[in-house]
Amino acid sequence: MRGFQLLVLAALLIGELHCARTAPPAPADAPATAPPQSPEPPPADQQTPPQAPGPTPPPPRHRGSPHRRPTAPPKQDPEPEPAPASPKQEPEPAPPRLVVPPQGSPAPAPPVMTNRTTGCTTLLVLGDSTVDPGNNNHLPTTARANFLPYGLNFYGRRPTGRFTNGRLATDMLAEKLGIARTIPGFFDPNLRLAQLRRGVSFASGGSGYDDNTANRINVVSFSAQLRNLLRYKLLIRTLLGPRRAERLVNRATFVISTGTNDMLSVYLATNRSNAISMEMYENHLIAHVANYTQAMIMLGGRRFVFVGLPPMGCLPITRTLVGTGSDRCDETLNQLAISFNSKLVQLLNFINYQHQIRISYIDTYTIIHDATVDPKTFGLAEVSRGCCGSGVIEVGQTCRGRRTCGDPSRYMYWDAVHPTERTNELIANVMMDSIRELYS
Image (cartoon, rainbow, N blue to C red; front, side):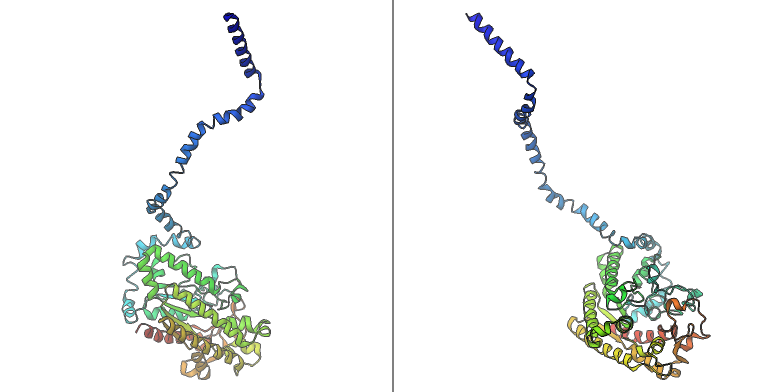
């Protein structure tokens, strides 16, 4: 009996085994059942992952310890930020070894004695074509001057992008300060550390306080110039270190020369004059000046030189377009310049008082107007037309390849808008006096 029972049990077991082997759906179900069994190992695996998340808390520790490592990447991250200027940055690290030694110093060494009398060793320039040393050469714009006869009296008789026959007022100011013979443009691909320390120009011909003025002709707006100023500061921090870079910017003189293009190119040459009143547009520009100055102060600026508007009604091109002729200026435009300059001076006085910084105003209007009324006193002979071409309408591209006057030093204007090197020297002399006061 027991033997029979054993046979029955054996048959049942064989049947179960056969069912387990022959039932294919079981694997589909088996995963269902198997997962619970396999999950049992995964739980162990999942318990180890939780141990992996467990290491995730250490990331804070890794943030602490690798903080030493990340610090290097962050420093490398800011470097890529100026990467747009990387072509400039890559050559610069090498020059420090070449220029920082007395190889580059001997030339500036004598002028350094002059620097001690003023305390100014760096010029940072923003503005329009009156202070653009050639930044527009690197832009897709027609607002350029990198062709003859521009630069006719520059070193080597070569055009550099400066809208004049020789040097700009800021170039001459740099020489008077003993900093350098010229101030290069920030877009110059051959910039070196020594030049960066002496100063650069972010200016772009055709720009103004109103960004719309620059956007019309694809040049660098004032807002964009401020962003480039920030890039400059980051680059200097990378090359010199934070403390030396901050000191350099704090001791620098910021020169701002712009505004004429806003009035002539935007306000008078478009329908904008019909949309808003003259006073409203002036207030619009003054508000921009306030914001820009605040931004420069936040970037470390402590000493500023603002150049006022010239007598716009006396420009050869406005005499032609308005129809006053070469014998007299347009007083309406001159009054517009006087009104804006008055508001600018009021704003600068307020900012100077509010922030306890030092600001100087260059009265270009009086300089140019006095020379226009009494040219002989200033060594000039022609003040109503430019030296390039006919002198009454040519500027920029229309001046390309034109014949010029015999002696530019006797002319107030090089083309129908921009002053000659001689006139720039008159402005630079006044700038020098104002900088002495800034550092007194």
